[in-house]
Each structure stands twice: as C-alpha cells, then as structure tokens.
Amino acid sequence: MKKGEVFGFLGPNGAGKTTTMKMIACVSPKTSGTLIVLGMDPDEAPAKIKAGLGVVPQETNLDPDFTCYGNLFTYARYFDIPEAAAAKKADELLEFVQLTEKRDITVEKLSGGMKRRLILARALVNNPDILILDEPTIGLDPQARHLIWEKLRALQAQGNTIVLTTHYLDEAARLCDRLVIMDNGRILVEGTPANLVREHAGREIVEVEKSAEVVSCLQDLQIPYEVAGDMIQVATESSRDVARILLDRCRPEKVITRPATLEDVFLKLTGRKLRE
Image 1 (cartoon, rainbow, N blue to C red):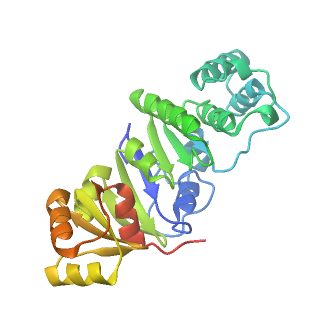
Image 2: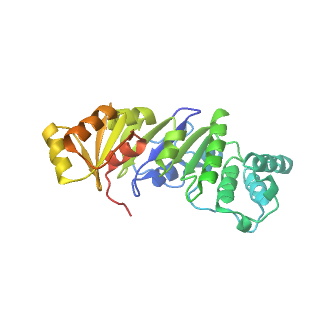
Image 3: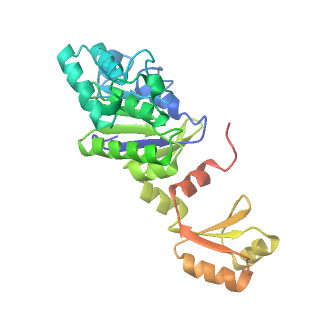
C-alpha cells in the first residue's frame, strides 16, 4: 500500500481478513510469504512496528473502569508520552471525535457509536504511521457510520495511511482508494473500486424477475445473464437498450435498471452462498 491512501480488504466470513490484520499488527505470526510493515519484518521488530500503529479492533475493548478521558490518558502513558502531553492529546482527540461533552462519563454509559468513536480516538493517541481498522462501523446506525466516515476522510486528508476491513460494500466504495477482494486466504482481485466495478460488473445492471419464460427468451437472444435468487441480472454498458429489448421480446412483469456496484463484483467473485 502507498503512504496516505485508504486500502481495503474485502471478503466473506472466513476469507482471512481479520487474520491478515492481526499479522500486520504483529498480533499473529505470518503463516507464509513475506510481510514488511513500516519497512520492517514483524518477526524481527514487532515492538518498533507496534509503536507506529494505531488499531481499531472489531470488539469493544475499552476499559470500563475509566472515563472517556481516562481511557485515552492511560493508553497514552503506555507509549511513554509525558503526563502533560498525554492530557493535552486526550482532550484534543475527544474534541476530534466529538466526545468532549462525555469527557468524564464512564464507558458503560456511552452508546455503541460513541464507543466506536472513542476506540478510534484511542488508536490515534500515538500519532500512528498506519491506522488499522477491523470493521470500524460494525453495528452502528447510519448517523454514527457517517460520522466515522467523516473522521476517516479527515485523517486521510491529513496524510494518514489507513488499512481497513469491512462487510459494508458502500463503505469500501466511499472510503477506499484501492482494495483487494479475498476468499479462502487468497487475493482474487486488486484495484480501485471504480475500475473493479467496470472490469467485473460492467457499467450498469438490468434486473428482471426470474421465470422460465424470461430465461428461455434470454437464451434465444443469446444475452448473458446471472441468476441472483429470484432475480435475473444482465450486466451491460447500456441498460436502456437491454431493458427495451427485454420489454419488447421477453415481456417480463418488471424491469429494474441501476448502476453496477462493488457489491455486484463481490457477489460475482465470492458467490452468493451464505457464509457462517
């Protein structure tokens, strides 16, 4: 990844995303291959690498015995930041994530969105060279998600390098400069969200309800299609032309046209089967 970019790891459950994050964060040993983080080998310099990382884990692991301020101040002291500097940093970060009014409130009294923002603030205490976020907006309502997105874009604008995993495809499309889609511990594709959509899903999608008549018609017209549950999808460069043909020749009850998305790419490459 490049300095100052947002790089995403996407994949279904069990694809290896969190394991990869743990390897980068020097929590788990690499299983094979070569891994260089901040110019160093995690096997040889884990402490130095960790000093340059900020990590937002999936789980909420704030200290329930401390206030919002206490969580940040105490964490800063782990990095040997002097007390005065740690106190100033804690207050600056509370303001950055809009939690100043909750400064002296204990963690258990915070909402889920507030806890995620506090975890993000904690990850920034040591001015990390790389910020690692594992499902940063998991379980949040739309308002809280958008606030986290706003803060991440602000961090990138300041030159921060961000690595994230997410199951929200719209989140990846909004935030990531580049990303990989992986499955079974293997990278399937890499590129910008827009390029991956164009390459693997076309520009537009036409959807019609699945029926034997429509399937037969599409086959007669030699129009490639994919079955998506109870719908049939046709990837195309011109949804208007395809929709007109379908309406004239196949007579479906309903036709939907829409832009192709990263979700179309994800499902095409990793399948539609539910992963537990």
